Length: 376
Image 1 (cartoon, rainbow, N blue to C red):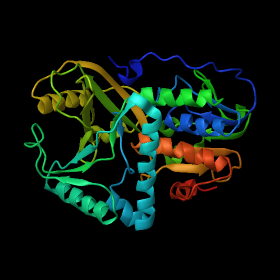
Image 2: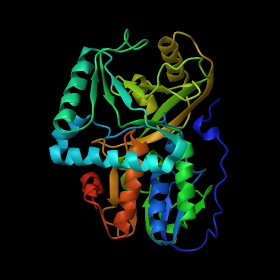
Image 3: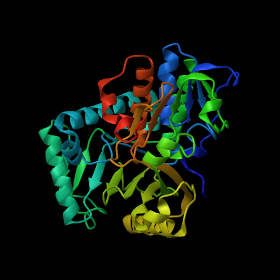
């Protein structure tokens, strides 16, 4: 009951090869970031090893709600005020390109459905209207929805529809990405916990652990705050109510349905911030009860819960990731802190780090410069 539905599919990792051989690049973390980084580096001919403490996709990459969304954690109008129009537009375009790249690699793990961001009250409606206008002004494909179908109409006050977004079986996707990396020559070492970066024999080390970084890089422990997200999955319903990812209350509630009718729902961490700011990957009765009640209200029935779990993600102060060379180090690179938006952003950032290691850094990497929050 407390294992991820996404991770329940069978998985056999490709052969790992010898684990004591020095490599050009060692990647710590076998989630979407680590596997995307390893894929690009191996295709370029470097020797690469992914070091994963458990199994591929066993962290946040296999324990999230299954959303594949463009953009970052801040709303677009907020990002535009903070970053400026040009940089905010570059960030959103980056994620749109990576949604397309994800679709080309993920196969049936990804469905292009669009997504709905719903207003739970008049204040949130005003915020969504501001984001909608900002997106339109800068040329992004977006739709405003005033008329909502049941069971949304009685509960929400309008929505933004993002046509580019989609739903993801995240563990299947990341395992598929790991297989691409292995075919390109990367070695995957599961059940290999790294106690210290000093023990790794590699010219470059990439730390790709998001909220699971504790103890490896002290600077990251200061800059990245772990947060717990809890999720439930129901037995299949006999009708499809939610054909795309939905979110409301500034993303604190999120849900959708799988093709076979299961409702996947997560959130409510804002009702217990102190308790949910933790590295403990366990469920709690309070939030689990709220999730079950929420699903019952949305669906008009109380479906049986088949799976419930928790996962840890990393938040940063400005809600943008830290991606690039660690300040003060020639050897260590980092890609962490996606603030709950790692499925697409983590994929993009893994490749951005790989390109920088190969000597061809993309201009978008400047958006995520670790030095803005970490000093040498």
